[in-house]
Image 1 (cartoon, rainbow, N blue to C red):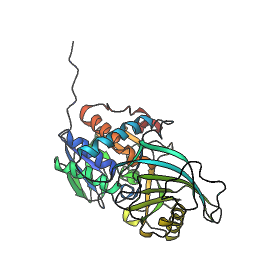
Image 2: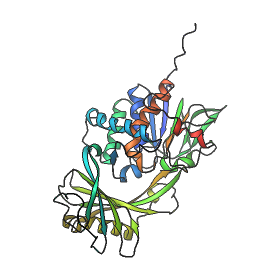
Image 3: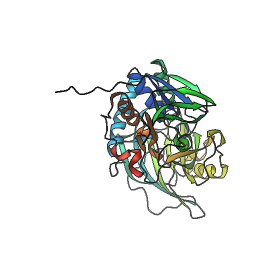
Image 4: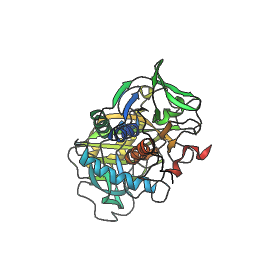
Length: 366
């Protein structure tokens, strides 16, 4: 009987994108002794990975094919908080559902005891999660910690514009970066909503960018809580803001979507001050402290989304040695660790072990 063939790990992998998914792929490849070069146009965590809420949930994806990926990733987050040796604000949370109206006066009182700091007009409608099921990280710091750990294991970071993947005889041989060729034995496309542009000529489903706004408030020390709100503006709009205090005294608020087209790069993302003001006012309904808090940052970013709402994780059809990891929508920060580990296993070992990737196969919609 012939012995099973053991895959030969690639000598050099180019990971395109220094967001949280690209950083996770680079980290887990570097852990396996694979030489990695991360190529990034602007900077580490310069787009959605630096401007998201960093909220993590164990079981919120259980009703979709994302469930096993999310559960594996939630556990990996706890492991990484121990192993990376960096303080990026990881902590477990209690998570609440609230309801509020910009004009105040939501009918009825709290449906459950409200934490003392929630002294505004918003009502606490129920519990959505506990310290067993919800957690948080500071997204930019977490992404940086992953990439720093990868670089400590030999990975390199190169700034430049990924202009395309070099494919010869059906095999990916590297990428074009700012007019130069960078050779590789394997290429990973993890450029978020810009992945489709870098993948011209490859057979991949379209990845789009969904724009959203956020603000951060200077509010001082608040408990480890997260708030998801059913909110009505004075002009009748229904919004679903997320308000997430961080351990450094900052409070993150998001929840305004916008259908503006994707710009050429992260530097071209425009911020709408009026949308940010709506978010700050929504947060102010929760407590008098948030109502008087100073806005420290007004932000916007584009989350990568696919037509069926599931990420693309796996081999690029028709191009051996080319892989993709993007399209995670609002769950990129949660699912990055398991995505990174699964793709590293696929590239280095020939198969993903931590989670079944078939639901996320890039060929599923071709």
